[in-house]
Length: 109
Image 1 (spheres, rainbow, N blue to C red):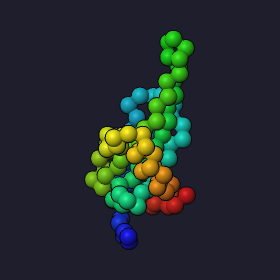
Image 2 (cartoon, helix red, strand yellow):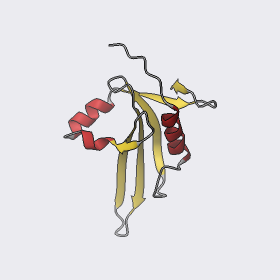
Image 3 (cartoon, helix red, strand yellow):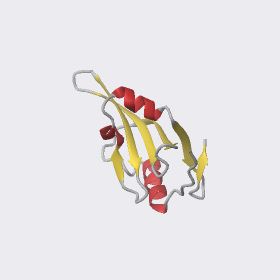
């Protein structure tokens, strides 16, 4: 399998928005915010992060989100495409971490 796909300007803008925190409606602290590429879905970029918060009953809420960034820059929740945790973990095991350099170009981490 050989893929030669270009990441679009719209995707790069959406990636930058996530990295700067502009894309988050709630202000809960995010940790482990990373960008990924998957060779099985070469046109998409993925943003994965974890958020934690304390609940009024002293419980801990933890949320792990994976968002898909399509070529047009639109963002969707990737969890919707999996029937179970096993499928999701198998898909995520093929992630390759990427980042943006100072010029807005994709680099492998």
